[in-house]
Length: 500
Image 1 (cartoon, rainbow, N blue to C red):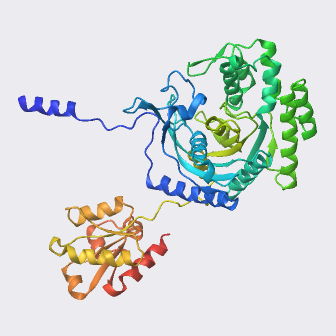
Image 2 (cartoon, rainbow, N blue to C red; image 1 turned 180 degrees about the horizontal axis):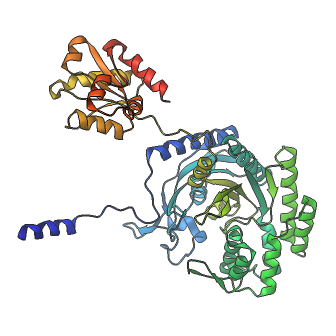
């Protein structure tokens, strides 16, 4: 009985292996597919003249600034901690605020406009859910120091070229709008003052959820609030019905033609100088897009606002248009895989002079999921080929097996020597679990003859399906050949080519 008690105590004290909520592990297939996708995105960004830069995962919390969900509680929305000097540090929330800090710190040394791209992990201390993670990767491109909306138009065109290159031509639209137009709406409904910043942010986030909750859901979020199907309640902006309706009218200003859309937007912002400026900039962007031949892929859409407060002008969003099936079997649109906009005030927080900037960010995991859904050749078959396994038949001759595996590696063939202590049967099982295309076997007889046995595991698995007895197996030795050591590399290459 005492022995059983000790076992129970040991079991109770053993750590439970578990991944934190909102975080995921990633295997070799997903990592390889992501790397191939990132390489294609990088190629487009570099074609446009952008150069790479990397910033740390951790920033001083005040560098992320007022754009955090809650200034008084640094842990709200972001993962934060204090260092030994009691300075608040945070895992970066996005890649834009760190870039603003980097540019400001290196301002005199950088050529302006400064064009850069970054890929990296960002972190959100928010409630996780299906498809909603606390850690995810973004791939950003930004132009800092260019006030012209030509820089914004270029971002939209680069987004289109990127999605075309990834095999999504005809399956997406890049939508563009202007936050100055929304500012005009805010003026019209009395939310333009500094004391209304909190409610403006609630309005922004309400509009940003239009594709998820529909016009009625947005009306609820602009009013008292909304209860979602899971039972979670989101407090609204507290607008009266008339003001809420004017905001909804802004999101529904799209018409059959561009001229009609611009007329509808001008009506919504009538009397607002800033709103009129936003419509004029949209007209300029639309003209540039059309002149460059992108009008079929980049569209003006008043429903796009982006949820972050730091945007100051044009905003854009890349949305995939093909249908997918949700958990309930209902066809839905895949939705947004990236977006961005102009943020002229962000870099200026660190400097005396204003510094205009604009950028575009791709959600890497979401885009990768989309590429898999459409069988994009970029990610199809991206998982790296498993290694050839050299079995160890004689523990006293390990050096001989190291020589064999080194020969394969020197020929550029991915290979490994079995490092465990099991016998041949278990080694074969290991190779199967590694999905190895073939194994190399050399016992004392083969060594004396200067040969190796090479077993094609893929063909062997096919053959074994038709063999019923051990005697038949031994007689057939399916997909297994003997070759001189001097031709081992050629024989392995032939098998690898057969199964690529």
